[in-house]
Image (cartoon, rainbow, N blue to C red; front, side):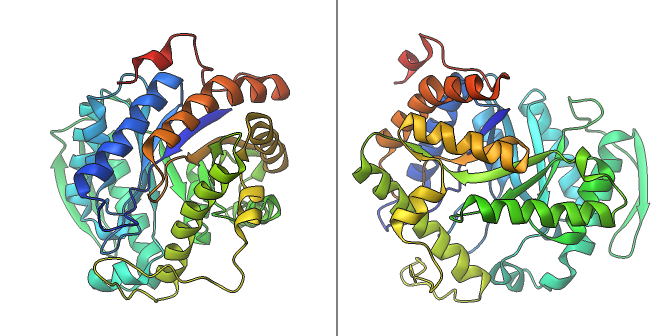
Length: 362
């Protein structure tokens, strides 16, 4: 069982700057590295405060020198928005900068707001993304490579930049797109799905959908390596849990705005428009591993068993949540939740806390 930490790098209030948002994300990653999390994940989004991070590879490179063991992952590279001739070199370069700790999360995207500004039809994104992935795979695993597809023509080229990892960084596929999930099945790539603020029944329905796509690809779903993306916060205070839930709901509302083309910004910020079917704060907290250590561990174990997840990627610092509260939650997750999960599952999880790691915080 693995745990990752996900930093969306969202901007909820005007006072948050690029520098402050990046620095807070880096602090959580440094602590997660000391605490034994497997992977730190960074997103790619454009032209809204839902996330200010236009390049997950830049965040991976930035955090490389700040960390020692934790893998640094893209969640996700939106393949359609890159020219693969550039992307393949950047992936190899960043894998070198991280000394072989890069994990390459790939997806086809979902926000029309972004694609319109790149002049790309979202409907065509899976086809384009597959060709980009073809070229990245071929360019990283061969000394010389060429590719001739529908969308890209890559002439015979000697690849001057080689990744540290042999043959290449691990690839994950993210999202619910059927075509991309079938690519994950055929290639044997781990899949990561997001339930946002929904309950475990919704997560189970996403698992069932993925299994159908595995069957369509002619692959046994039993071979699926599944990761889930969830909000998580450890606290004994119900008030703090609701504060975290309010910040999680902010991210959910913005994601829904962008998915359904309600992207008008005011002073650079999207409106936090509620949706008819959104859960209450109490329901949101109950749907996610949020609460005291025992409650968090219980919900994680239930999800692992219900959907057979081997990796949980956790939002642990969201919106305008005070950084100190988020860092304390990460500390308690490592020192209190991980051992409970390990005991209940009867198998190792990503390293439980030692007696000394927390003292390294500045």
